[in-house]
Image (tube, rainbow, N blue to C red; front, side, top):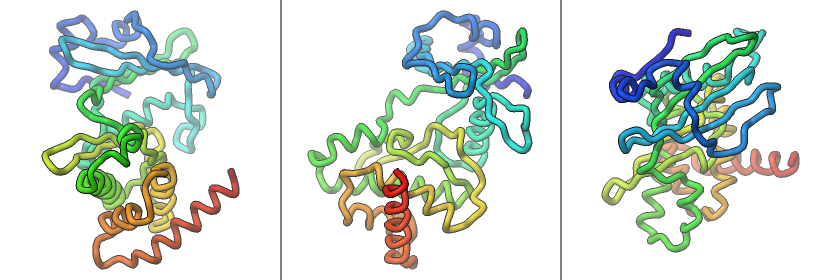
Amino acid sequence: MKDFIASKERQLLARHGLDSFDALWALKLEAVDEPNTERGGWSTVFRLDLDGEGFYLKRQSNYLTHTLTHPLGEPTFSREFRNIQRYADLGIPALQAVFYAQRKVDGEQRALLLTRALDDWQDLDQVLQDWHMMPPQQRNAVIDACALLARQVHASGQVHGCFYPKHVFLQARGDAFMAKLIDLEKTRPALLGERDRVKDLEPLLRRAHVWRDADIQRFLSAYLGSSADLQHWLERLTKRRKTKVVSA
């Protein structure tokens, strides 16, 4: 895959000598969490600040995913980068890729992905912690923003695959909220219609544990539109949730 540099950030990276794979790979930074080592390699996330602008730099080695199109494996960042670009092409609000490149070095498959930090945004997990202190109008605006984001993803023929509150980021815009997604590694085309959509929505609604029945009904009404069978969707989501609870 050809190296990618976003045109908007090209000069900023060049000014700091960070417009190449080698420079970003060698950069000394402190990791923001423990490395992932589940796939026989490793993958780590770092914070990078340049001239007051925040980014997250992710580096990995031999951290691969195996698919029918890549039976020998490819870096998981490669798939995530393609999905970020797909969301951008489809107009789905999501994190922005700034740099992507991969290399084979001494038998290692290395990859790095640089994305813009969402410093002026707050993830839904954090918002839910203060849920009961928020005025009803603000709570409803958050629910509507999350529902419209889900509707846009599915209307574009995609499923997120990891639709958790910690992956939905919100920003206040007057009396309303804007929402966008991160963690697009598991995104894929929706192939099974309503079944895929229910499977995608259920984790969000289950993990938004402070949402009452009225909140979930509001979410579904905004997601489906007024002509949809709300009761049918509530029954399908409830059945899916019971299945997940039993299997857990």
